[in-house]
Image (cartoon, rainbow, N blue to C red; front, side):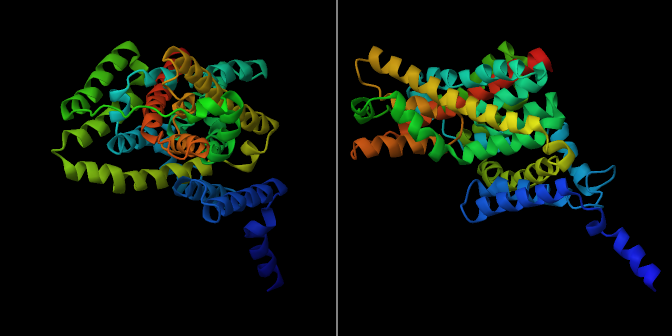
Length: 370
């Protein structure tokens, strides 16, 4: 009986638990706390954290050949889930503010500078070209894009890069305001912008078609992300397939989010995650996001000057593609200086431009390193 009891105890996960796995379990519980208690990106952070928790419980075999999470992970590994997320995002996105003010695409482009700045920094820290590209894309503040590019270029870094990308997306209201106030003056933050012109239905229908054709012909490697983003937007703006639009905005979005999140978390295995390079990735990701915010603001100041003071430079901070959090932060900071200021719709132009910009940046990096 004692031998049977000993054999049973030796077969449990408790007997083979390592210190690294215990640390990762604590980290997973910390992320669950942030998601549930603090409501930091709960829809994705809960699946990621729970996937991290499951994969670091010993003897489960979940990420071994034939394991449950290993089978689900195929969709992440083959780059299937992120483009589907883009389809859902497109079905819920209004590109009207960008169409009404095409100049705002320049702010979305300027905010992508953080990606390439950090790419160079990662190279200097000793990461390979593909790894540096995957780390740099964190600066786009677009979780699905970061996951897609990393799954194609640096699969072993998927866990830390995904956690960093979504953590910084959740921390937009904390990270951005100090940078916004440091790089703009009080008077600039008070600027009230003119109301955007109405955008016709025809323009909204033509936009995803024109963007798809032009962007994909120019950069074929951007087709999975840009194509799905614009397809999702087309079914929304066409107005003739409301059931497809509703499915993409709701059911499909939540299903893919669960599958993507739990498998990304499952890549945060202790032996992979607990390395010095993880800390470098987290730091470089913060640099990427901060630089992207700063360059958007600097370009916003340029446009403010060229427009004769008619453009509020704060909207440049929304050029990172954290939709719609970055636009909401712009609105909040602008109203702190001028309670009658309403910048949300003006900020949505650069914000949705940032989604396109980060997908294009991913396409460029994939073209060189894929």
